[in-house]
Length: 159
Image 1 (spheres, rainbow, N blue to C red):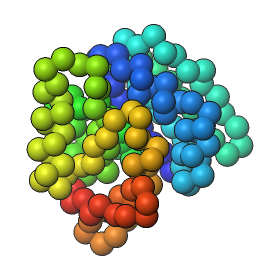
Image 2: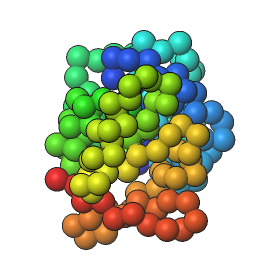
Image 3: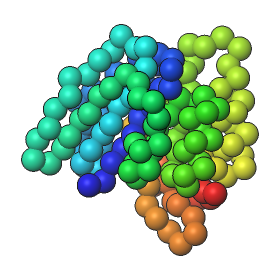
Image 4: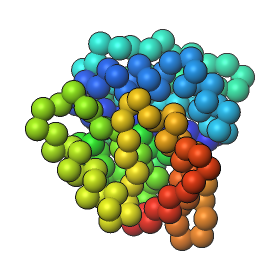
């Protein structure tokens, strides 16, 4: 079962949860070969209804004691730019797309995402661009290739 895990940590990031759980997003995720989406929604007010069909499952929860199990089973992690979430995902060697919360003032998350992207560890985008910029990760030797809009690729190295 190919899985996408979305985490917002202990915060709320309703724009991200709303975007990835919208019907067009679910169709896109499934069309890219993923058949499970796990949403960790934190304090958010957007609470998608979990469902399961023969070809796709959506699981939703607020918090767990540890995200390790969900990160481990994920083929792709989409996360807010919290340092803890980023580092835990990278330590597990998982492909990571960081979504910047543009509503935050003094956005230190953007600085962290830019630096980790510059070092080749992750790809980052905004909620508006997540489906256009990223979602399909294909393995390629010792690197992962993240396919982005227009058919271009970004080679990412994972620890």
